[in-house]
Amino acid sequence: MYLIILSGICFGQVNVNVLPHPNHIELLRGNFLLDEKTGIVSNEESEGVAAELHFYLRDLGVPLQEGKADKNIVFEKKAVLGKEEYEINIDKKEVRLLASGVTGWFYGIQTLKQLIPKDTERSQGVVLSGMRIVDGPRFSWRAFMLDESRHFRGKEGVKVLLDEMARLKMNVFHWHLVDDQGWRVEIKKYPLLTQIGGTRSSTQVGPEKYDSPIQTGERHSGFYTQEEIKEIVQYAAEKQITVVPEIEMPGHASAAIASYPWLGASKEKIDVPTTFGVFYNVYDVSDPKVIGFLQDVLDEIMALFPSEVIHIGGDEVKYDQWKESPSIQAYMAEKGLSTPAELQVYFTNNISAYLQSKGRRMMGWNEILGLNLHHYQDESDTQSDQELAKESVVHFWKGDLAMATEAASSDYDIVNSLHSNTYLNYAYRNIPLQMAYEYNPVPEGLDARYHEKVIGLGCQMWTEWAPSKGQLHYQIFPRIAAYAEVGWTTLKQKDYTRFLSNLELYSKGWAERGIYFAPIPLAQSIEKSN
Image: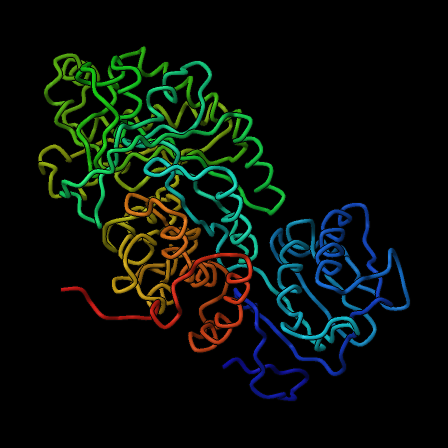
């Protein structure tokens, strides 16, 4: 447990039921009565978040006065705090929420909401224990990824997930919109991407078996219009969440190639795949028309998503079609590229330069470094002297400490989403709750001078085997709360026993909001599959 000490006086093992757990708490004498005699005091900058708190308390059955009263919740600016930092001071006279701007106040409100006792009679007011919280995140990148290529959800389902991210102070929604099995974002210049690429004739059914012969025999369709994308991006922004789109290239391109066969290295007409796994279809990166297509797509994507970072995937590129294409082999000879891996890095750097020219920054899975991560690649194909553009954010999902050390020492920013520890689609027996909670994005053994290059983590929900909302939520919850605390709370303040206690209370909110989550005892299962 966490000892709370003030002025040398120990007040005992006091637990504050907040997820993710704050990084500094002091217990103060005296309590604050939150009732109809309480007012809210804000300035022009904090007016919006103050109104949100006012509406929340009203709906909770705690009506407040408009404006200043005899006792108040006060929103106060404190410029020395970082963008995501906040302070809460509660004594018998007032509750003060301090931050340097809207993001900090927003996070302070999320904490304050959790401090309000649950299952209590509120008509006579709510008692808040006197305390001081000084808080801010361990990592700047605290992401949740949703794959909608494999199964399309729709905007209301996405908003539910954004709501839950906001409550847990997660700040990046990584949106996997494009893959082999479906293209889910409207591109006005290329309408067939959604007219053809947004529909597959059937879907493979597992459970979790890539060689399963079972099919649904039903069409699966769906995509987001640009207006819907803008709506979701704005909705996320109001919750201090940045939406980072992932537009896969040069592999995982089957849906695009099914729409426009000239995009593919083989130039053959294909259908949108109805099975899962890694496909051979890749873009013809030697064709100027294909490069123009990708730049056109990125232009429309950048117009929709204000995020500085644009994720281009770059993973699991099978090189067979490149090796078999005379035009691509001629292109490689012209550019002095000896291997397919060198071609991929060369292509990736050109995309990075294009994004840089537009004031953006490229991110990709760690294959973009030219590494060999897969058994199906020939070792000779993955030798590369090409150096990835330094501005790139490297998203690790597979590999070892040596790879991470090499990337960090080469001055790349790293988001560490090691699949064996962060993939929400994995069964609880493979990633039980405690394993998720104890994940450290800074690899063990990484030299301390490179720790700051690890900017955070992501937890990924790949949806091949999660066609329904219930299956989706079951895999995400409660583990997302563990990853939220990994991203926010410093190592010395983490405590798994305390986390479980807080989670038991926090999960009641999921039940009230209709979130179907795995029972916490089951989520802790460490039984391994045969």
